[in-house]
Length: 121
Image 1 (tube, helix red, strand yellow):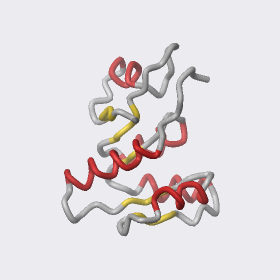
Image 2 (cartoon, helix red, strand yellow):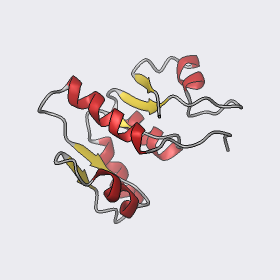
Image 3 (cartoon, one colour):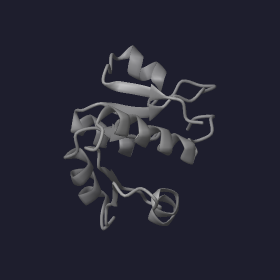
Image 4 (tube, one colour):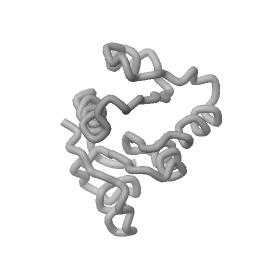
């Protein structure tokens, strides 16, 4: 895989704030996770966050791909949901020791101009 720490909850708060500033009063967030207990514990205080029921990965992918923009972490599932969405994508700009396909280096190399790096911590 990659040799870096995954983004902490600060990243999610910054990413939410990024879209709230960009779309004042209009941003609504849908969270899909394989750990909904954790996600709810970290994001429960946001009135504009909705949690996907998580009944299946396919259903979550369909819901996420119907959104306008995305906040992702460093995996393939988030990448594909964001890619299918087609809007702006905020992703964690982590320092990696090795090249990793879902990172700033790759996004810039292949010209993913709608992918916006955000400091994770």
